Image (cartoon, rainbow, N blue to C red; front, side, top):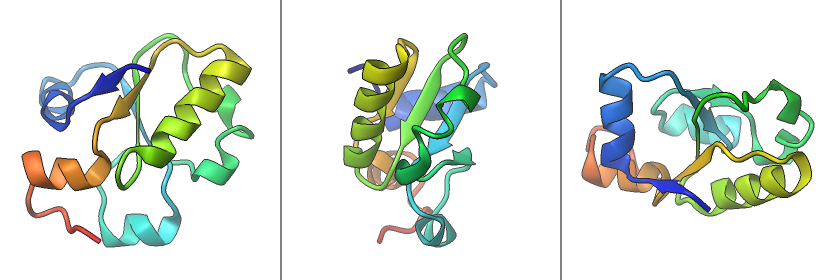
Length: 105
């Protein structure tokens, strides 16, 4: 599985790369802490696989990187994705490495 570091993600955001950011956490978690992106909770990611682009990088994240890894493995296995990147360490690592103002929970 391909991964991206929080610093690499920040660079992609700052340089306005053409990519999609998907948050697979639950709505209540997003209310606590957010770094943007489209919310597609893990439980519904397979139902919305057709809405996820295959023609550009897609960074998927969660709190720690575990749920996003599950989402990526399932999407790759069932739908043939090859453009997915897991945010290593999730939003917790993003808070540590990039933006300490992002709350940890």
